[in-house]
Length: 205
Ligand SMILES: [Zn+2]
Image (cartoon, rainbow, N blue to C red; front, side):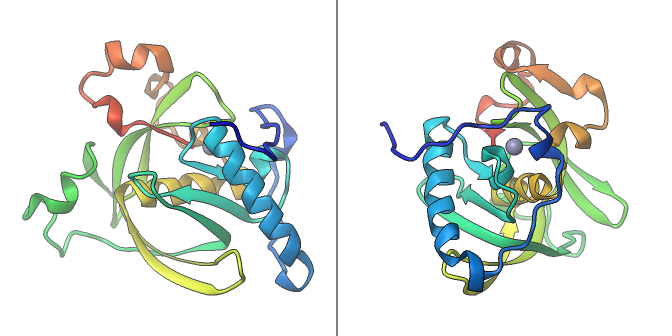
């Protein structure tokens, strides 16, 4: 499908990807946010991403788009805040397979919180995938495209996408989160040499 209003992507090396973005003020940016949300969504879909942040189209505002795991819904996230990490140690991790089976990856405890490892790519770093630890369960707040305050709990895939995109708004890309450079691979090698992780668990953002 072809989309109108598709923007040019910025790639690693472009200074826009290393800037801390400005918060949206709905009294000034209301119209701009709607246009930006459409442009981001169309650009993301054109490049088959599941998330995209404003600096990836050279706009330094705290706005990103994220999809759900089935890619049936896209949310515009404005002025996002990671409120807290929900630790699962007191819950039933491994007890019921319901949530932990949904995302394939290794669950590790790090500090007092739980992170989960998974493969990520980035529209701004084409051709590569990295194995990145992210918090599995998070509580977040943000404004929607109309400036309405929202608060949500995100898990697994959606938690990963949120953290990846929030990083973009702070000038951070996923390769900054790698524990080892051995966790960075060329995307075309993924299906051949990363068989311990299923291809469906890689996420391009
Ligand atoms: Zn990205």
